[in-house]
Image (cartoon, rainbow, N blue to C red; front, side, top):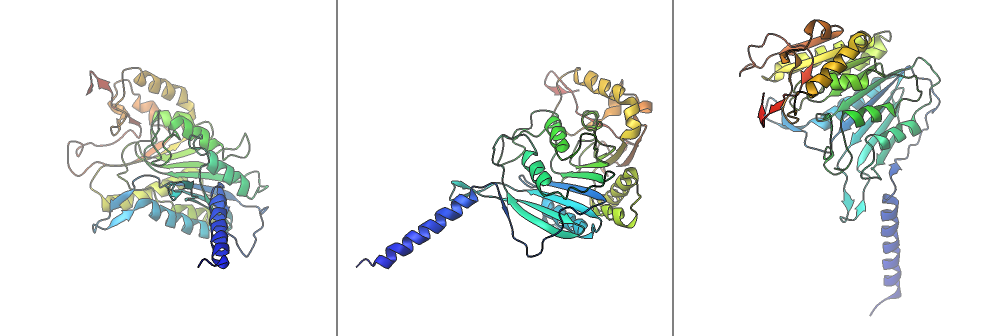
Length: 366
């Protein structure tokens, strides 16, 4: 016999489920905190991590153990944030977007906001527009939760961890959001959304990606950043170490160039002990590079006009291009380079610090 209490129980359960689903349809969900931090606190610097995890970042360490590189980066970023006692750290952990019962979107990505070493907010979020411009959602969260520090000389740093950012196209960069285009143009525009004032610049941008230490990328970023740390070639699913950001606490007067070089040096030493393949890391001092940026831009355009690029190949050294002016383009940069321990590149003496895509001619590499 059907009992009326059973009907009410079913109705209540259904209502709770529907309510949970509807609440899950919102774009963000903040995890509650017992203590409330001062949102107007003055901080000396701001660090933004963007960790792309919506793809395959599995690799194996020296002992053969499988490692999710993006998870390791997240752990290190949170350690840096907890040590940033005079700074503010934003961590965006962009994960694959899932659906409840295959129908209702979930807030799968994570946003962590630290102020002076303390976790101020933790937010689960998703991208409401499946074809929005890159970094739009993340910039909105940054601008909403930031402290609005009144310090005019606040230093700003942006660290991007992911796969290679292509010069054009970029659909399918996100496995579960394939219509969000990620390329040098959309990246440049997206990164600028985090700057709170028109005249504000980044002290340092770090690209922990393959093949993005290029004339094209430099040309995109040079107007609003003072220093770039990137790899002109392949990072082999490794990542650039960021622990040197702790120097902002122990040596607050450290320059962006010195900080970038410390990060590059630490990363180089670790990679040299772990891998047998080529290692190439370059610090670009844009204060110097700006003096010949017109020539660098002209080189990139001239090289592009020679023919179709092999977009999915590893970069070659730009000095292999006959009209590359090594004397000019070597100014303001420092490169950490070690050739592969084996193969045709194992006897290469050095690297210009600039990467270029190989060109195609009649369907074959030049």
